[in-house]
Length: 455
Image (cartoon, rainbow, N blue to C red; front, side, top):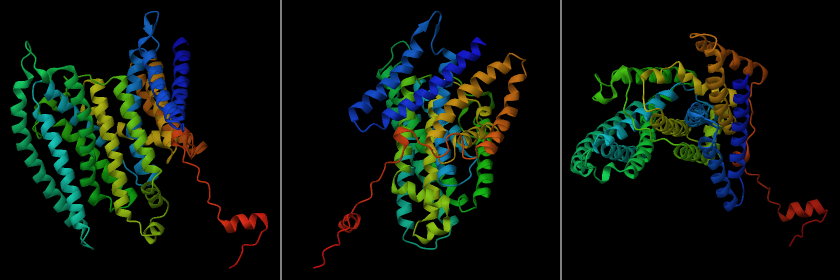
């Protein structure tokens, strides 16, 4: 009972913290906004550091749930953009989550082992691939009626060429930087903690961009399918990615990932500061996209594709854009997760657990950013935290029953509240701005009963 009561209090406190964060972020005063964000960060940091007796307010188990909740919210927000706001049913989000995790982990793993080539090759690669995609997109936009597979072939050839160039250039630069690492006994400037922190940030961003570029190549031909068929194709993508993870040391030239045995030796760089910073970044980008003209076009595709097309909206482009941005969020979340857990296993990213973000966005409310954030934290602290521990006390096999309780909970939610936990309600920063209609002279005269003067 003590554990149950303590867990319940923590869940309520976490939801209240989310509400407070979104409220201060939505304040009109920049000073209040900055001070409020720092205060919300500090509250959790104090809870992690301050001890009551032998344990901290948030012990190591709770801190782990907190970090996992932050990464899960990033992944779920990306899926909500794809499915909730754009209407494209996708089961591939965990595939991009895994791509981001393994990409970022490999960069920092190589760095800590005295190899700068991983960072240089990946950095140059994502820049060149991005430049190729943007350049070809501008070039191909001149041709109308170009078959999708023909465009995909050109993109694929350009990406392969850019990858080969990045490999050779990056490897050369990386070899030149190797002496700056020094040795274990006499570490060089590149072995400093500051350098590792900077590399971690770059690795997470590169991982997110790489996941987005893979999403572009995958989505270009596949998004032409209907929503249901796209969901099946995205599930197949997740299975393919998981199979490649199992064979990274055989099919792929990454022996340090150790295939099905799991990748070890990943530096545990993720702290509450970095988890909070990247979560904040994803929330701000998501909010600004949704409340822009681009976001309105994305949502119009969900509502009625025919009407959107009649209004001149390029449906294929906005489907692809939402898919790419959503995959970017998943890749960033994967990079943050990898450096918290310090170990990656292909089983973490299989298609069964890939349903987790889908359950979260349905539970929180399709098309609700606030619902996704609240449901993500609630999911981790209640279902993966409290419920898993309570079931574990009933026997060694009891925790697996949560996979039965998850769909039952989701089914009840869909029957009792189809719009999700919060429906379309948004809190604070995520609430759309109120637009005051412009009152013209004719409107004012009509309201006062005065006829407009005719000259």
